[in-house]
Image (cartoon, rainbow over all chains, first blue to last red; front, side, top):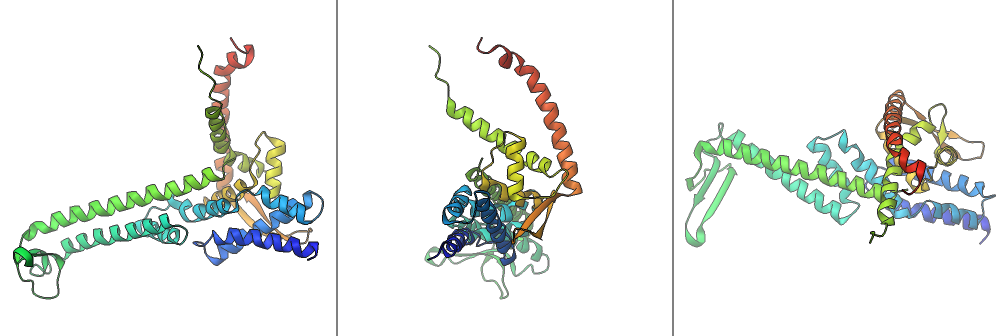
Length: 204
Length: 123
C-alpha cells in the first residue's frame, strides 16, 4: 500500500470512528462535522511538513479520544439548546435522539415517554369528565380475586362503583400536572448532565 | 505540622478556570477577522496562555454557532480542500464585549487582593 493510500485509509478510519458516535444527528450535521475534521487533520498534518502516515497519525492523535469527541459533538447538538428551548415536546425529541447513542439515553427516552404519556392521560381524564360523566372516572368492581380498578375514559358503559365522582377532575388535573412537571424536570436535569459530562471529557 | 499541598485540587481549579475563559478567548480571536478551526487554535496558543486541546475547539465552536454568536461558511481554500471559516455575529460581538467587561472588572479586583501574594513570595 502506498503512503498516499495509507494516509487516506487512516483519515477515513478515524472519521468513521467519529461518525459512529454521531448517530443521533442528521446526515447534514454529520457530514458537516466529518468534513471539518477531515480539513483539520489535513491542515494539521501539513503544518508538520507534508501528508505522510506519521504526520496524519500525529494529527489524528492531537484530536484526543475520537469517541469522546463524537460524544461532545452529539451532546452539544442534541442537548445544547436545552437552555434556550425548554418545551416538553422538544425535550422528548432530544431524549429520542439520545436514545440512539447510549443505553442511558434509551432509558431516559422510555421514562420521558411514559411520564408524559401518563401525565397527559390524567389531564385528559379530567378534561373529558364534564362531557362524558358516565364514561370517565375511577371505577372499582368485583371483589376478592375478581377485583378490578379502571381509571380513565371508556367507550363502553362502565360496570362497577365510581369512587371519585366529580372529584376526579381536580385530582386528575393535579396528578397529571405533577407528573408532567416532574418528567420535564427530569429531562432538563438529564440533558444538562449530558452536556456537562461531554464538556468535561474534552476538557483542556 | 502543615498539611501537604493538594496539587490535584489546584490543577482541577485551573482546568475549570481555563474552560470558563475559553469561550471568551474564542470570541475575542474572531473580533476582527474570519478564521478556521486550526487558525483559532494557533491564535489562542500564540496570543494567550491557553493551550487548548484540539478536540475541544470544534464542539465549542458548534455551541457558539448554535447560540447565534458565530456564523460559519465553507470556503474553497488554496490548499485544495475546503475550510470552514467562522466569524462573529452582531450578537457575538455584543456578548464578547459584555464578557470582556466582566473579565476586566473581575481581574482588576482580584489583582488588588492578590497583590501581597504575588509581590512578597512566601510570608
